[in-house]
Image (cartoon, rainbow, N blue to C red):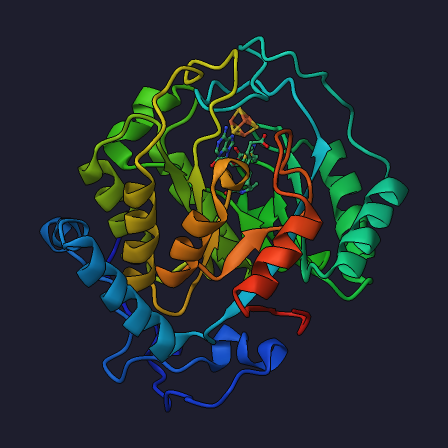
Length: 354
Ligand code: SAM
Ligand code: DTB
Ligand code: SF4
């Protein structure tokens, strides 16, 4: 797949923009969401995207909020809970990642978890209000024996009535189809940054490998979760390029996680200076404008963000979070704190809880 600029028929479907109050669970179905009469765009030029980044902050947020209100249920957040089902000892060299075998981050490697334990954790996540359960594994790509366990695991989590997501590294077409057949709804595979910056942070695979897996996931009929990381030392142009690539895919990812780098001691990016919070929010706002029907997820890094900054990210168009005390190996805000925050902001979750 080489970044074509095609609008798919499913994305052309126009519909009325609802101004009704929100019943979150129904309103969040993006397939029902209204699209602009002209359809979604897949032909963004880099100067156009850079021009959005260059807008005065308030103009950008205003534009993002307008797009958000026209395409998404306002005041609503979708919550996914993550679980690392296989931790550490990954052969890849992603400079941001505490799970790479190449960096001494003090992380204990763990074997693939037992299916019963994963199902217990998924049940607990559902009880706490998560609607999607995302299983992550520190693999370059899954092996045959891994696929046998993962497909059985996905079947069981799916039977709980939750949406399922997995992030297991690169997939062949056959593997993508096997996961789909097991009931997997979403596959997370991030492009992480611009094609140009990518080789500065990862040398063990290339950007095209990521695009090939994304294409395999699409062909198998799964929803795509694909985003990246802000704060690795990339330029604003790199951020614009990353979002341009995502928006110009044949179909926008249904879910776009925007992670703020969690600078983990022992990784090559441990000493990376923190990103300006307004620049982080700008990235969310531009993602919202470019991909109006997608869920934009305020992802890693929330533990170090103030409530006010998170509120600003929601105002800029974020409408999804990772929910639960842990991401994969690093911390995330307490469930109680998140529930309080949503309540203080008058936000409801996709499951209808406040
Ligand atoms: N091994 C699989 C892969 O790389 O595709 C799946 C797991 S990997 C940990 C999933 C994503 O987590 C990465 O693509 C990256 O975007 C994000 N991530 C990993 N470490 C991070 C960090 N320290 N800060 C922010 N995001 C991070
Ligand atoms: C994504 O974009 N972010 C999540 C999920 N997809 C798999 C992972 C964040 C990981 C942060 C570092 C850690 O906890 O290990
Ligand atoms: Fe491995 Fe994924 Fe971490 Fe890269 S991001 S080192 S592929 S677990």
